[in-house]
Length: 385
Ligand code: MG
Image (cartoon, rainbow, N blue to C red):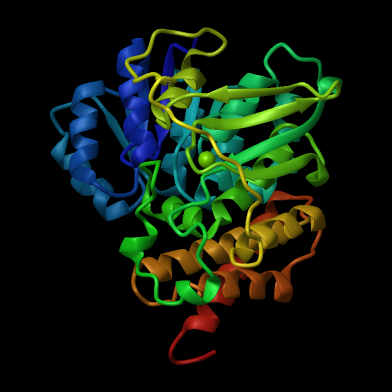
């Protein structure tokens, strides 16, 4: 079990639940970073007493430093601050709960310090899966997934030999618009898109869940985390979200991980691993559970998933371009500046215009990320494109 953690993105949904888990397990909090909700950050700082806190925005960091002037805490800002929190000697584990590709550099910094990465930032592996996994293997840094599906797969593979895995069965609820046609989704509002039937999550990931882009990002993430080929991953729609994913072994046996849909469980395991500790969460009651159902994903009406699977097969910077364009498009949608179905159009357009370059270096990946964001800005700027 880890003794102390740095939490990158501590005021978001995963960050808050990580602090609950740390409190429950008696894990010390060495560093916190946040980008917004500075009042909550102050509350968390007073409660958990980290030695270092970074606020992404410089002005907000100054205000924060004044607010906590009575505490013995150092305050940093910007990417420098995130990197310092990620590499802090006191922290044995870094929980990467920031949203978006901003998580990439700090994750690399933590790997270089051989820390356990409790990985909740899927864009890191989507953009730079090969680089990150290679560097982690070289440095001997452990990556423990926090995403519920990947945690499930990780748990199903505990104690297995690497040659025993034939196929990953990646489950997903299908999101709030399961069964709808793409044309019916034209006028979806941000409020409708962020309302997920089973999981309580941040706004960006909730929109991604509704478009099935989230499942697509998870597909790519799983490919890198578990070193499998795209054809070894099958997406299974399972609306009840009771099975969090499964693996099929070479002899045909299927192993599944089940539990209530609560992110607190995979978060706690990422901290307690390889041990298991009692948790305060609700358990499954099979007397009242009813039936579990399964269906094929609808790739025609939810083309983001098909796009992501395509990018997984293409390799190089394609997935990075798709993810960055999607991130920009989702932010515009959440601000009411973009129609729902345009999210896919922009992500697919960016891949078509920019995708397919080799992704062999961090520089190439960051460049592809920037180009994809510029593409979306140019296409959505009312004055131009
Ligand atoms: Mg997930």
